[in-house]
Image 1 (cartoon, chains in turn blue, purple):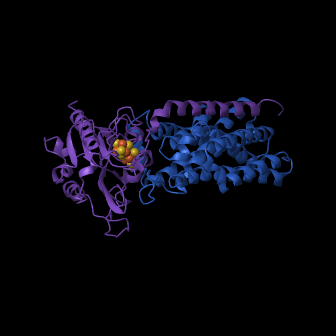
Image 2 (cartoon, chains in turn brown, yellow):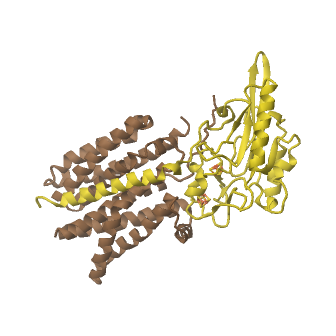
Image 3 (cartoon, rainbow over the protein chains, first blue to last red):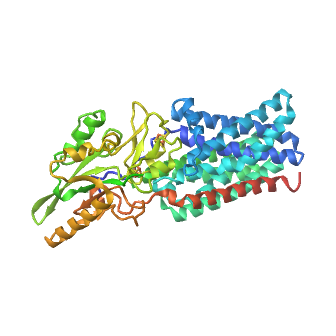
Length: 263
Length: 252
Ligand code: SF4
Ligand code: SF4
């Protein structure tokens, strides 16, 4: 059957690693910004700065990856000339652009020590936008004719949400191990592992992804190691495992989708 | 809006001459691709893409020791609910007064989102200029009351252009005629407003299953699920917020 074995739907023309990298960085940044806000509100001041830096670096790199994929910076700005609810990329650009601006502002004011009030406000706004940063990219992928992405739309946002939480926890553990970071990592791990399992039940294609298997192993390793947070090397390893798990999750989902076009 | 215009491609009379491909390239100034023998019968075009806006498919079938030829000139479906148009973040893809779907090259930023959003695999990004291209149903010609180049060049009237309602009625009549002549496998594809894309502005009369021609049997525009997708993403975002908040409660 089929026409000379040719796939019907076209493969995405997006660049790798740009686009999966953009997914990972955006998620890590989003959860980090929310973490910075929560740390501020709960008086865990030592956790604020590293989380703000992670949010700023992550979101600016995410914009950078998107711009690199598009080829020129104006092409990103072109998307901000319109707002289209039917286009997840348009909605996403309208989340990403203010978010990266706000996180950059909160991180730089934190460093320079000037205009702290503005920085705090910017950090708060970024913290509120953060959760949207973690999950909008799932809609971006799911709203395509790529079978494995579209069919996974009920679980994909939760996979990305859990993965973003562990990535933010990982970045925080690298900077300074703390109980909140450990708890965030454990909650994120639980969310990611259960929703990945649910996604694999619904969409067979993900079951054979080596990258997703690696992501699961790294998540479990990160969670286990994070419990030894008083041991500095263990905490660093936990952080690295979590971040690597985040990378594997996004690349795994991305690759599986591309491969599902031909299967 | 003026009347909705469309294509009815009656593949039962296609002779595979590829005049449509050539006329389209010439009129629309579409760049040539590498000349290559693909080993797919007489099809050396391969598929619809940025540089091929009409594509004649050749299928050789063996029926009772004889070869049967299926030939079909494929094209953008100008969907009633067009995924490409929905997801385009720049507004480069738009719906014309003829209810067709057209890309404006000067606005397209080459994001490529439309490419995997099309359930038929039609629209594509051109390598050299990085923009998305596809059939415009000769927007510049039909605005002047001319027929699209492909329909004008087609020697057998396999490609018919006109008001969509008229074409649908004509197609129903043609299927009845073929059935009466014993061509039981004749069927219409993309004509029904009930299908997954709300009906196509360019529909077909086929002589076999759609997959045989490289067409999806049940194309669906994924933006139909968009509200449900945003709802799930919203719930997941709430889960992140709750998770972060919970992590900062409890022991320091
Ligand atoms: S067939 Fe594809 S490119 Fe053509 S209008 Fe429909 S979704 Fe868009
Ligand atoms: S590539 Fe161009 S036409 Fe396609 S979605 Fe992006 S901006 Fe729109």
